[in-house]
Image 1 (tube, rainbow, N blue to C red):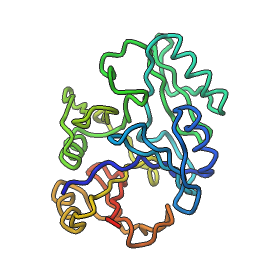
Image 2 (cartoon, rainbow, N blue to C red):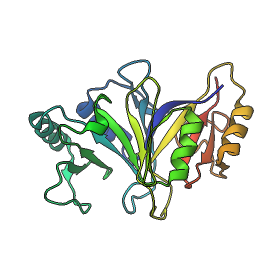
Image 3 (tube, one colour):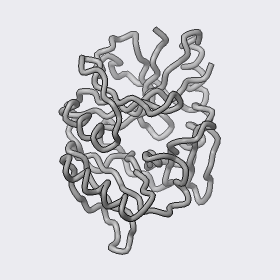
Length: 246
């Protein structure tokens, strides 16, 4: 059976502080706090968790992925920005233009995110987390569409986007040129298998689609042990993990 998107993970220098920021901004309840990290639960059964795991890798350059948060009105956009700043976020400059309607911020650990202006038709109906916006090739968008069995909802000018058949947050890729990696990604996807799935068969399916194995230790973050997760790379070299059934 196909893997499901279980979580979007942040490797953080201070997981509890970062979880507190995003919990306050998104209004999601945190759980955990052990070696397994801290998670924010999804608002419904179809959603994904957001996990904050200990990581000492220093931030070098912009992340390859960031959240786009939606707004239903100009007033709501201003409230979201004000709340983020109150919780410890800050304004940053990534080359946006003065006439751009979105606001670019960073969380307390330096991870970029955007608060999108009201009236954005592409993110209509997606929820507060409108998109996980990624730097990536058309090939990687096709890979993830097949890996998750999420349909493509945008495929134009080498930009792609996918969305669960149940709706919700989109995952988007901006097309080439894709900046070279300077170290492990701070944000990555974590997949989970149903209890009756064959993990090795699913790993082989993902590899056939274009994933590759990595030699990194699967127990080095999250405290789950060497047999709990398998780490892979997608066609653009981005790390992702697959949780084995327990």
